[in-house]
Image (cartoon, rainbow, N blue to C red):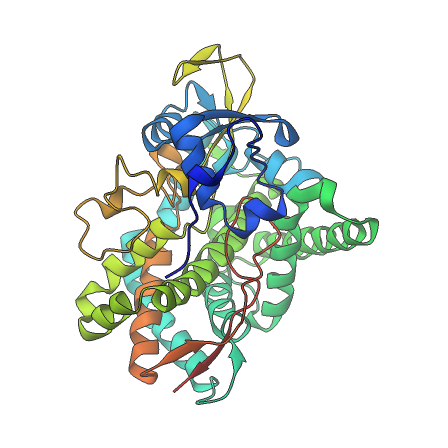
Length: 407
């Protein structure tokens, strides 16, 4: 089982929490436990933000969009490397703009669409599985968990699956852009180049969709009108950026983290293999236990108080999803995986409130199909990576690569 450390090992006088630090990124959970127990609203100087760590407080912040605006989210997460800098993102908008943008994408990601796309996901999974070797080491992320969502979202958007490697590179670069102070000048130049390529590619696709309408999401967004308003090219671009990056990062990390969970909890792995009806619960529990998105940001729209700590108007708060999901006041024995939790769907791995991830149902469907297919093909999946190197983006948690041998 993965060690989660102990909050009692910290000295109160010298405790420091910085999500950008190597120590926190290596294993944030002891830090989260200390925060929940001793400093549930904790100022983080490097991010000029208050870390919110308890489940109740995190959910209250996420639910109260009038008091806590989402408008700083993309600015902090992407830094200067935002490919759609002139547009509102649905994830970083408040009503009424959020209502308009969300209504448009909800139409595209309907239950009917998910039913229709199921066979496409199954076909994509089968194709990827055919290329996975038996009893030979390979990178699970590079060869399976990353191309799967990129191909699915690519089909959804109407973009070429042949450019999967480019999409993955653009996504990784832009999410790493939030770590600006840790980047070298060469890294900055590469991210700028990737963001520029990302922007140019999608603006060309959007222009083509205006001239030659096709039955895909870009075409639907270009043609869509909600309450008499159409989306601008940059608003469509922002939607594409968000869907590609969020769809890629969430599903890629969800599947990789699920394998790590099975390694660390072999009894759970055996249970879910023997009873496939538990796969949806396993996906939810692995999302709770090892949240792909660890934290995001909100801005206080007026003076307020959280857990007795005054928060001034315009101050940035940082709800920590990964901490809320390990809060023992909400989840019994939170550092242990349990496929039979009655409250597992109350995790906040996909957010909460009006900004609940629009692709949650799609990601869960991809996970269900992928795990069933992996269990059908392989009786054993062994992680061979001696250590896990985590992704660069401080607000995400997933392995950069994951070497495995399957048999």
